[in-house]
Amino acid sequence: MTPNSAQAQTVKETLDSLIHAASSAHLEILETLYHNDMKIYMLAGSDQLHIMNKPDFIAHLKESMKDGNTPSTWANYHLVEADETYGHVIISRKVNLTGEEKIITLSIDFIFEDGRWQITREVIYT
Image (cartoon, rainbow, N blue to C red; front, side, top):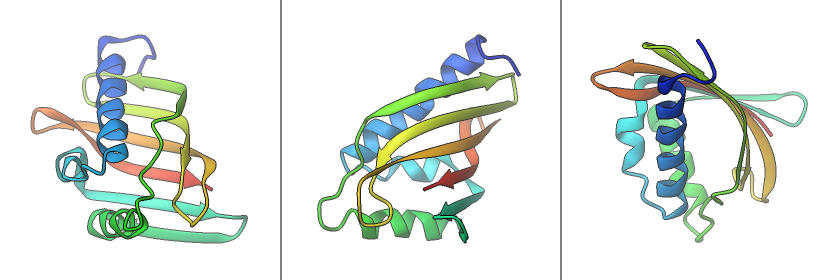
């Protein structure tokens, strides 16, 4: 995988579209951008690891957005790399996943499957 490839740019655009859709509470995009076998690993604090699958994480996001807490569009990309099949992003984001807004760091893996980039794994450090 290389950081300056055309595929890396497309992966970044895919993640940007997810960020902007989620900030507008349009979570339907998650059904196509999240791979059916996706796993989320959220390390909260120093010792609490939460593991969720696609339906669990979508439900978690919907619950956290019930009171109008939509995610910010703020993002700091540290790394975006991809080849024809796989992509990887390391990004920091301002989010409210645990009841308060904070900056978190994510490592996100993508696969190009069914004609589109899909997220297969997110590792979230809160």
